[in-house]
Image 1 (cartoon, helix red, strand yellow):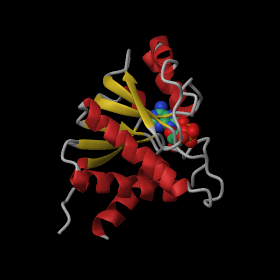
Image 2 (cartoon, protein in one colour; image 1 turned 180 degrees about the vertical axis):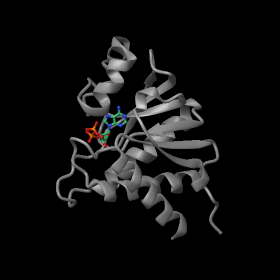
Image 3 (cartoon, helix red, strand yellow; image 1 turned 60 degrees about the vertical axis):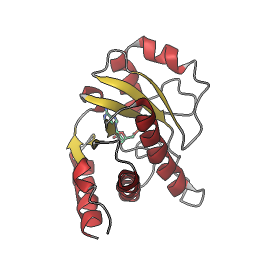
Image 4 (cartoon, protein in one colour; image 1 turned 120 degrees about the horizontal axis):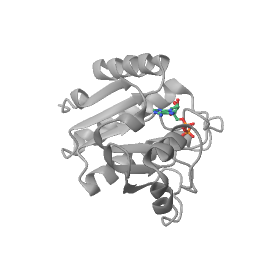
Length: 177
Ligand code: ADP
């Protein structure tokens, strides 16, 4: 029988830069040199030292993840990952999004973070369909938690009420399915 890991996954509406948690995940772009959306919000709340550290990392491939300190943020680590740009679904977008979640969680385990907050990776400027992205996020996180005991909590931070409602629906469906 599968382990019940869904109690470790929580959905919350809010601004990820305000989360008091071991690590937050940034939906970055491959340069890791800052951008708009959640990336811009994280850099502006963390202060300029974050960009300096990011500039030493040599960028990040789609689906991979790299960790930095969190500077002025109320968290210990920022895990920068790059989600896929939606191109209609035939360019491996689903597995690249899955990799972004799995590799971020692997980074969390590597640095000893026990609680991790995620934004809805790829659902902003990168254009991934929201429900499809939400299902991949929850399925991937649950599969990781089934195999790894190190993480106590994964918090899915939704910027809007609409995305919170959607994630809660998907979470209930997958929990019961
Ligand atoms: P991507 O380029 O991966 O699509 P975006 O930053 O454009 O990344 O959007 C990813 C998601 O993050 C979107 O659903 C957007 O609404 C959300 N978002 C934007 N700002 C914040 C924030 N401060 N906290 C949490 N989520 C945010």
